[in-house]
Image (cartoon, rainbow over all chains, first blue to last red; front, side):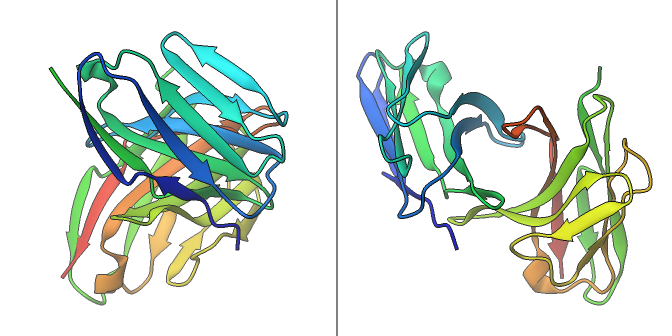
Length: 108
Length: 112
């Protein structure tokens, strides 16, 4: 079983603050994805990272894939209320495995 | 394109009843999958299909059946619903070679 652990489970911050959430596993993944999910909706893909050590930026979001392709982080700069949601990581191995998510609340 | 559509949006069943959750996609994706999402457990793969006529089991297949007669449709069947199947169910379809999944809006199922 390829277990993905996400931390923290919950995060509540003020608008303008920076934050980092983590996705860790003991397994190696061929790729790793980050999704954001809003209440009552399905997850929406934010980014896919494939290469160990890869860093991708999407506006204020920075995604990093660990060198060993076992872990990943998502950093948000100057968080906004619109960033509020459930952030999920998913690793591609024999199939797709999801972490339980980090529920982020950004207060205005 | 409508993307991935799921019906119904909400459903309440009694223990032992059967039902089919519908999923359709209009993106001509070969790979489709069903997940369930429970609090604190993330999404868990139930069944998946790599193309019409081909299905396989995921992490939690017990109590669920699937079939894939066309590229567009991938229904999920509960033959005898149990309270443990109370969950939110998501269908997804995938493009490309690195499994970038597009999810439907979900079906919230309650089994009493």
